[in-house]
Each structure stands twice: as structure tokens, then as C-alpha cells.
Amino acid sequence: MRSLLLFSAVVLSLVGPLAAYAGPPQILLDVARFRNLNTVQKGAEVEIYVTVPTQSLMYRQRAPKAFQSAATVTLEILKADGASAYREVVTLKPPVLSDTTIAIKNPQSFLKRVLLPDGKYTLRGTVRDQYRPTGGETTVEKPLVLETPVGTFLTDVVLLARPAARSGGGDTFARGGYRLTRAPGSAYARGADNIFFYTELHGAPVGQPLRVHYHLTTPDGSAADADADLTPQSGRPTTVVGQLPLGPLPEGPFTLFVEVYGGPGNKKLLAGHRAIGQRNPVDYAPAGAAGPR
Image (cartoon, rainbow, N blue to C red; front, side):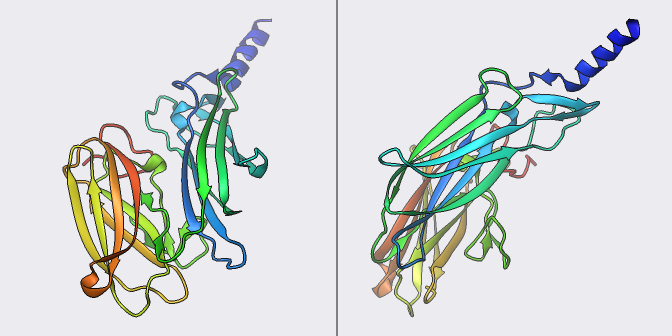
């Protein structure tokens, strides 16, 4: 009987869950709209970048010094009338940890691309912690409006955690010949010295160099500016990549404006777009920014 009790205790210690989490599970949805290059059907190619911070998940002991969490993410895109335009369930299995007291646990991210016609939609993401018996589900919704622009225009500006890197392959995270490492939640945290960004220019006049102006500003009036030359590409979108130092910008929200100028002296505004981000130099950067030096 003593041996049986000891064996039961060992089994429970191997498979029992550890409540090493804080608050409900979290999910971040970053959405970018790019032009659908199919000229027959108007609409957009929607990129959905999903991030689940694993600090908020419960870890279960699978073996001595082996702990793992698990979650499912349900992605849905609903039409204005409530009908489903897209639905997919993704299972996340973060790497096994030897110690759940580790303060920094890498987030789990994935990217989905969906072609949709013009219209009004609702994007819904639900994360469910598979090891938590109660309070283990969180749902986030975002409005999504798709309307094909006319003339010269910029697509959504994507904020990146690292510089856009040249990529010649069909990488899942590649776009416009670059591999893009997104900043989850458009947030820049501890160790981030620069913001990096990517967008695409459509319908620009070919044969003349253009000027791209970058303007970074915060609510308190702090700002940073930069200019670059741009030569439009014929027959395909012109990629626009760049970076700006965060420098002395304060903690809190910031807005990045990307503007393209042409005409005589490159003074006529042809297209513009903006992105809103957040700087928090105290917390750990979920996008894997460099640690403090």
C-alpha cells in the first residue's frame, strides 16, 4: 500500500498542472490590408498576424523538468450580415521549458493571408488555454473595412520589430521580396532603439524619382523626420521600407506618417498613410527586440 501511494504521488507530480500564469490568456491581432493584384475581382489581401503571449498560459508538467503550455486560436471573419467569410482553428504548442519560473517566455505567433472582396467585416480572434479549467478563454474583435482605392495610394503601414530583410524565397512571412518580422501589437519595448516599417505604393507615375517623407510624432509634440528617394517600379507595387530612431521619444503612443511627394521639385503630395504604435521601455519586448545593453 505504501508503494502504491508513493507511485500515485509521483504520477500526480508529473501530469498535474502548474498555475504559473497571471490573468486571462491574451491574444494580439495585427491586421494589414494590401491590394489584391487580381484585376477581375476588387478587394484586398488581408494579412492577419496573431500573437499569443505565453506568460498568460498555464503550464503543465509533462516529465521531470519538462513543462509545456497549449492553446487553440480560432480566427473568424464575419460579413456585415453575420455570415462567415473565413474561419480557421490553429493549435499552438509552445516549446517545453525546464523551469516555469523563467520570467521571459517567448510568444507564439503565426500569419494568415485571406483574399476578400470589398465590404465591411468583423475580425474575431479567440484564444483558449487548453490546460486551464476555468477562465481560460479570451475573445478580441476588430472592425475591418475593405475599399479599393483609386489613383496613387499607399497600403497599410506595417510596423516591424527588425529591419526588413531581403528574401528571395517563398517564406511565410515574406512580402515584396522582404522577410518581415512584425512588432506584435505595434509595440516597442525594452531594448528597442528604432522602429522599422514596410508599405507598398501603387499607381505612382513611372519614370520620375519621388520623395518619401517620414514623420514620427507623439502627443507631447516630440517628433523625428527623415526623407528618402524612391523610384517607382513598372507593372508591380513599389515597396517602401525604412526606419527611424526612437531616440528621446517618451513612453506612450506615437504616430508614424509616411508620405510620397512628386511633381515639380517633389513638392506635390501623391499619397500618404499612417500607423499608430506604442513605446514601453520598461517591459520585455514580445517581438524579440534586443535586450538592454
